[in-house]
Image 1 (tube, rainbow, N blue to C red):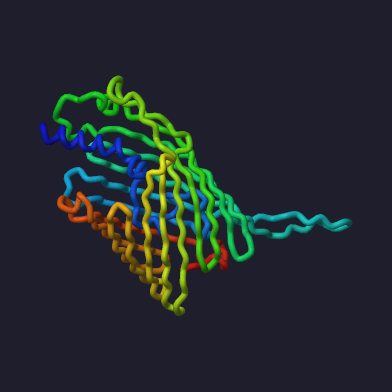
Image 2 (tube, rainbow, N blue to C red; image 1 turned 30 degrees about the horizontal axis):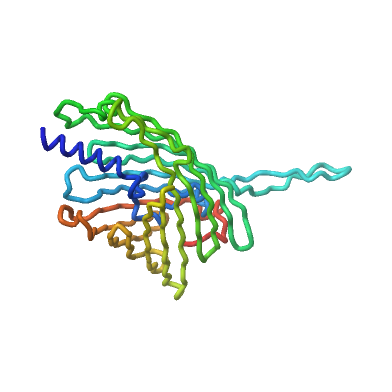
Amino acid sequence: MRACFQTLFMSFIFFMTKPLFCQNTPIYSHYMMDGFILNSAMAGYEGLTVVNLITRQQWLGFENAPRTFSFSFQTRLLQRSYKIIPRPLKKNRFIPARKGRVGLGGYLYTDRNGYFVNSGVAFSYAYHIPLYNSQLSLGLLGSISQHKIDEAGLGFRNPEPLIDLIANPIYIPDINIGCFYYKFYSYYIGISATNLLQSKIKFGSSVMKEFKTDRQYYLIGAYRFYKTRDLQIEPSFLYKTTEGLIMQGEASCKIYYQNKYWGGISYRTSKTIIMLLGARLKNLYMGYAFDYDFNAFQRFTFGSHELYVSMKFGETARRYLWQKRF
């Protein structure tokens, strides 16, 4: 019973202090492979229909360590339409046209930290503006998340202020916005803001009456160097901060071979080194990330593991040729 209470208490402390470490949202080592979950403007930016799955086990060997699962879907509306060309004294002419400026996406996730479970669903709308050899995208995302305590395994009297989370899960709506610029065959950069509503969470009636979600800001970017036809090098970065200027950064470098295989390394400012490996088989992409912490958790864990699986559809008529990266 005592160990169970300690686990719940430490989970509660971790949950409440997550904003201090810019972790209101789950950590993803494959942020460069599924940037849509950080920036709503990236929905459909490649002109493809993309399905992504990420599952993460953090701090393996640490009891009740964080676990994350996310599933995202995005597409570009490239359906064929027709415009009418009026012709005097003749029958109107119907000309086929392509409308490809709208991207849609959505994702759902579950993030478990001990007995605390944070899950949510979101839907995104993006508008893509073609420029000379580039594209500017704007995105808007609406989400709703649920915060609760998993009763399974609790073998003691429910303490305040946690009792309300066990009996009544908390639902929080929110809005995110994003802007994304993509230079074809070269680089991209994007900025986004989450938790714009700064919704308040109420915990019981005494200790913590209200907890407000902080706004968070993300800056993401990458540049691809084409060394040879078969070899490309892509450094990338992710920078995030809360409105109170609590910051965290991540720098990565990946090497692609024949657009089928990749490997890389990342460094996160929480003193974490990440190794990345992946391969592509036709439309199927698979990646693995191993995180090793050089901080206080080093003594208690065997590292964190993350698996990335993606399917991309639309290599023919649905895809813009000038957007073909892989």
